[in-house]
Image (cartoon, rainbow, N blue to C red; front, top):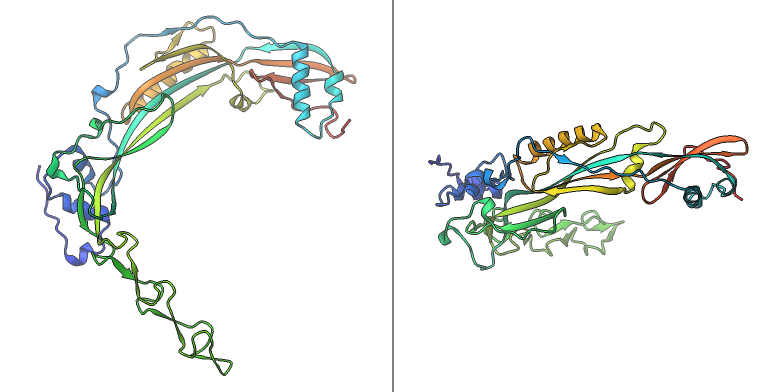
Length: 369
């Protein structure tokens, strides 16, 4: 591979970003590993490295997963009343009297399945970084070829746990003059423009109300408090060391990508309430790659399983490494409680294993007893 000579003039270098300065330098350094080849594109300061094909498993064709049958849970009248009383206690404007004295007419258990697919992925990106150079070891290309992005070893976290780890790439370091102070170790004070003094803001030319100014002692100027009168400050980039150590930093991101689905079959109950409760995970299927569900009584769950699995495979396999997948089916308890109070028919819902309550309208909402 050949590179075009892009040497910049001294005037050009002073306005270049540290990343681009590093790239110009590396064009003349014998590193030909994938890190440098990808990173030498100024348009992408944080390139993404797709995993090699061998790192991602390939799905088997025409393979499916069977799910066992499950019994729909029920809620007794005592449990429904206790759940409603607990709900009323959390609402200070609600009276507990209706909950204690209502008469149940019917408790309707409703079958609600929640399908969830989790795809645990690992993604690797890199970016140029620098730090002040104070004589520390420079692990440069003279020590060998830098490894490919996916050849750098890292410790895997616990599965399905989001985590980010940053690793300095071996053999990519080099030292260069600081791009901000041009190797001086200090920069001109922006507050006094390098003069070391500033105009007194209390007086006018040393006089205040025809008297000598006590703030500047009649001089009309005061020492700059930002640079202590020196006219310059220690460089905030190199911290006075005059040199910077540049290197490539690999960022490894582990993420649990979750997709779930609950069929919307109860118009009087808002589906968003299910997000805050749990169900009974009667079916758990975990593998490097999972396969669509077949033979489940609810065909919509089977269709969603196929759809989400294909979506996750297409979305993540091209940019990330798929480490593990897990699909679950939860039976989320939902009971529609119909009751009568003072001659009026009303209802509420008991949902989740936590037995939370939702009611669109509760009697005596503004009276306390």
